[in-house]
Image (cartoon, rainbow, N blue to C red; front, side):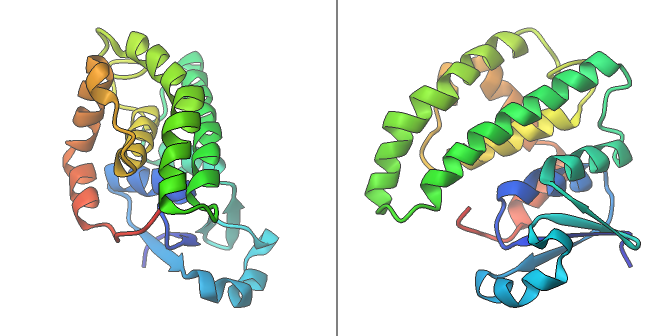
Length: 203
């Protein structure tokens, strides 16, 4: 029986970074997914009534980024240097803020055409492109985001651009260092296998 149980909806969204970390770290875990229609009944069984949560023995850990940081330590994907670790935290927080805006559009009641228009005319120029410019400068000439070793920050970038690519927001060709980084992360054997076998979901 796996030591960890990740509970979330049948989406990528807030839980996907944790799945990538566990997969890359070769850490067994139970990936429990709750369907939307079952949530009202199951909500009272979840401490705090929000997802995702990670069950660790008798403890329930909430908040997606707290779970990701915990998993990353177990997977040895956190830099030993405190400043480098802080830069990863800052990157994760930035991605979280951007994806919050992204999912506001994706989960809205707009038509698909209206969603695509909002993504390209509002979300992309306001939230994504400025960050991509900074990332391109940061990654130029670097092996990974903060050091010579893969960290969970690199996986977070992979998750981020993996989701954006699925919704026709692929502008990576304009940013060669960023594109190379994304391809390197998604070509990691365990990540590649996960991408090929994970459940197909709308978000």
